[in-house]
Amino acid sequence: MTETAGRLEVIATPIGNLGDLAPRAVAALQNASLIVAEDTRRTGQLLAHCGIARPMQSLHEHNEAERSAAIVARLRAGETVALVSDAGTPLLSDPGLLLVRAAVAAGIPVVAVPGPSALTAALSIAGLSARRFAFEGFLPARAGERRRALERLAAETRTLVFFEAPHRLAETLDDMMMAFGSERPGVIARELTKLHETVYRGSLTELVSQLRADPNVARGELVLLIGGAEAQDDEGDMELMRRALPLLLKELPPARAAGVAAKLSGVPRETAYSEALRLSGHAADEG
Image (cartoon, rainbow, N blue to C red; front, side):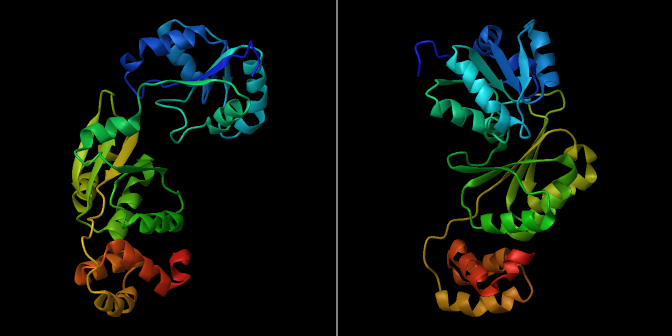
């Protein structure tokens, strides 16, 4: 790194309420030589609200690979570059990873300017355990891929956190009931920090009922949280599990079959699920 090298500042911006933009973030944006943004139009609105006028350049999934080298060259020359996403903390299901890696590889300081995040905001009010959680971002849009992803998570004991598009919420909840069981607790947090912020809580069955009764559940930006699977304290009856699984797999997908077999036998659900995948062979990959 040269004497004049600049730095890359990764800046969190509001997820809805503009009052959440921290004074440090405002100062960082004001002092940046260049602001790289997922959508310059959306970031431009934020900058206008704050009375900030700085050069901007787009950086998104379609151009990040080709633009990162030029941005690193500016950092090497001593400029301070601010990285922002459309909302919240960059890199959490947003672009920026390639740029951060390129800056690190070039010996450029990368500094966090922390602030809003839909992930942590949802966890803080969900009422589910936040001691251990797994952030899965957006599930696959294709139904088969989504179901396979959920089946792999069926035995996960940590709280699961997802982002989801409103138009896919109903299908995703249905797939979750199949993979996790209808009584697994869940939370839908929509429009966090905004005027119409609403939090829906209940079992997956209850969430589906709320969605059918109130179309507003599937409007706006959504965070979907699911309670983790119950941990099993002992090994249970392995022989019973092995006898039950082949029969259950004739009627149920691997995750559901494993869940039922685990309850019957007392075997840990992850153990039953691994056995279910082995028995079903390639069938689990074709769903």
